[in-house]
Image (cartoon, rainbow, N blue to C red; front, top):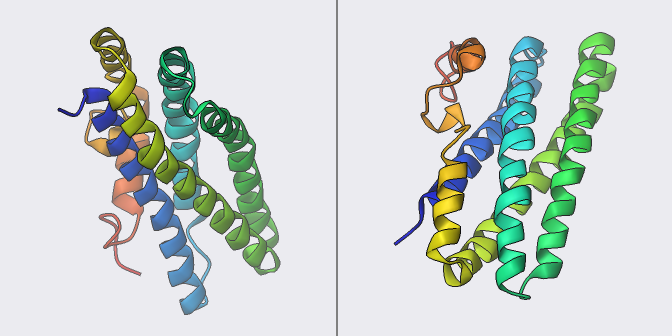
Length: 194
C-alpha cells in the first residue's frame, strides 16, 4: 500500500514538472514564431514555482521526511544531504531565473538566449532532483519508516496542498491559479493557442 505522503509527493512532483515543461514549451513556441512571450504569464508561472514547490513542498521534505529517514537508517545519508543541498540551492536558482526573466523583459531580445539557458538549466536540475527522490528516497521510506512515522507525515503532507494537483487553493492564491490556467496557451492551459 502506498502511503498518502508518497502519493502527495508524486502528485506535487508531476504538477511542478508540468509547469516547468510548459515554460520551456512556451519559450520554444515563441522563439519559432519570432515573438516575445507574455512576460506576465511567465512571471505567474515562476511565482507558482517559488511559492509552492520551493517554499512549501521542499520544506515538508527537508523538515519532516528526511529527518525521519535519517533517524531510521544510515542508508542514503549522503543522498539526503545532497537533496537538502539541492533544496537550499533551489531558492537561489529560482531567483536567478526570475532575474533573467526581468532582464529579458526590460532589455529585450538581447537577453532572450540567457533567459532560455537559465530556465533550461533550472528545469534540468529540478527534473533530475525529483527523479532522484522518486527513484531512491520514496522506496527507501516505504521500507524503513514505521506506521507512526507515516501517520505524522501523512497528516503534515495533507496540509498546504498544491493547487496544481487539483486541490482548492487558499483564497489568496485562487486568482493566481485561475490566471495561470486561463492564460497559458492551449494545449498547455486553457488560453488561446499560439
